[in-house]
Image (cartoon, rainbow, N blue to C red; front, side):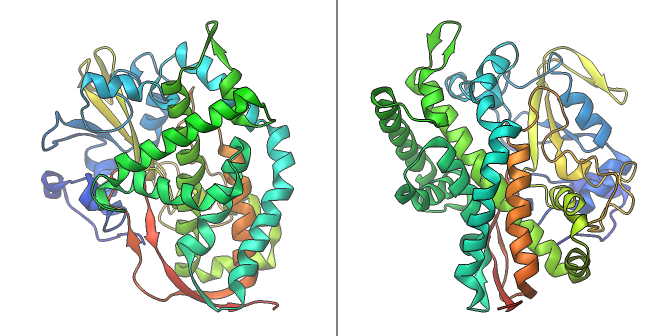
Length: 410
């Protein structure tokens, strides 16, 4: 749901973009104010050093494409300050690397996400989406997050990694706990315990692939070399976690927000049913409108400036993708959900540059397959209870969304 009540300049002192805000919904009213009055805004932070909040589309693109000035590795990509021991662990993930290391590690898994590979997967993805809706259509109701949105993304990435299918439901639970630690999903310390279980599973799979290679990404990781060295256990663990979380949480939440958008805008579902040629633009609009990652942080490597505002070396610079995706200078009527929107230069997969999302094509294929089944077979969807959102300043998550619907063509 979009917050539309206008804020004035005096409200800048009350801007709050930290975790508790997001549990109430994306603060588009605050983003509108920031883009208008303070697009490079200093945001204080309890227990932290503070950061620059960046909300304009052009600035997100500029920062994304200038990794020499705006580093992913210096302070990692999450807002909170980290001690050096934690930073060393985080830098094992490609998300928190700069070049040339980043490109070397990214190339290890890039072959698993080529157009040829994605095209081979599409038939399987389409079939999975059909089965997911088959399982609920006769009930006239479901809990959308777990019954529909969670299914195809986790099944696809687990298949690519080579995880046995009996483990797929557990992987959903574990990634929920890892991402949902602020909400105490699974209880106290659940996020840490979940991570340890995922690491142990990765170690078991690595040992199995060394003994018996398969045609999957895990085998590629085990056999990969960087500068003549095989990946160690810590590097394998971080690759595994990054792929599982990125391949599951982000697409799942894009599907959740797409469902909410169609509930709020039923005429757009009617347009799609009447004109299937709109599906390519519809998928991009779902991505723009329901941005699943709130932000990524960069750290200034040198003294610089953004829009004339001095940025000191070491300052945290946080790009807000949902804000950039509603920038009035780029998108006409930006708060409207319009499945025919052209052009649609959204930054949901990042603002370009070396960290552009490797799985963008895969995510689009899964969104189109799943929402095609939802739109064409689940008519008149309505919320059947409150929507619960994740209390996170990183993932734009929905944890519970009961809906009712009228089966179409059954």
